[in-house]
Image (cartoon, rainbow, N blue to C red; front, side):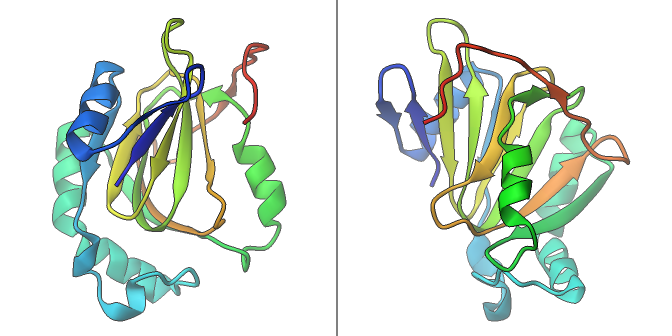
Length: 180
């Protein structure tokens, strides 16, 4: 279940309803999908084959199609990152740059853990959204953010896109941002 850490105050927000309420107040979509419906070989598997990725998408087809119908997504895929990913540190360094997009950025976490760091209004500042399996989050377009892995450095996530070429990141320079 997702948890939020407000960086300026170290306040933690937990519990599905409280997380959803906080995120919705910042126009961030939050949902929770049932990952227990994945078959055994797909659960906590960070080395998915293309066939297994297709099986993940098939498992969540109703949820994906519902979300796509509501939000205009046209394509989707599965991304896996782990210690077996070539150049993982280089990829993470690229991910860990604050940026914006002209469309929202969405992740449905299937396995592992990830974290969105999102810029809130001035009185809130940056907040971390720590994601676990089943958490679905969509950061609105033009909101400064970045996504990275948590300490376990393993994740399987479904990504959905409006643009067929995927998100195009626009760097966002913010001297007030302090890495944790």
